[in-house]
Length: 142
Image (tube, rainbow, N blue to C red):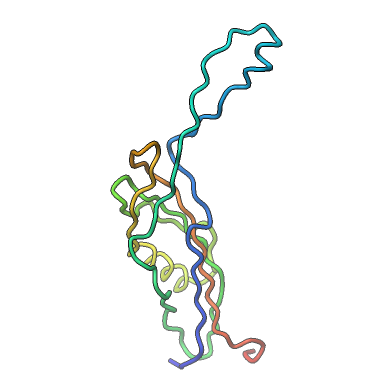
């Protein structure tokens, strides 16, 4: 093993989606022009994304054997349930290195959230986060 300057960043909440669909108001003006019966549009629902219960903290760079310069980006998707628990964790984009991908999965599995809310009720939310693993060696390594 060797010591080096490590840069590992996590950009959480880059993408947020809910399982419960939001409803857009109908285009009543065009319906009136066409002589269609006008239905009362459903109100647009207020949705707030899940919030981390604690700071996610530093991402742990996995041990790398000397001479191996494993760097890369890992994109992880997961679901925050109505109880705030994280589940359905999956790699969307692999770094190409098993150790980096596994470290990203372990990190996300330890996160805890307050659930997303829709109209005051907890909902399941699909999330995505990106991990950037860089040894900070620049062009010095082969």
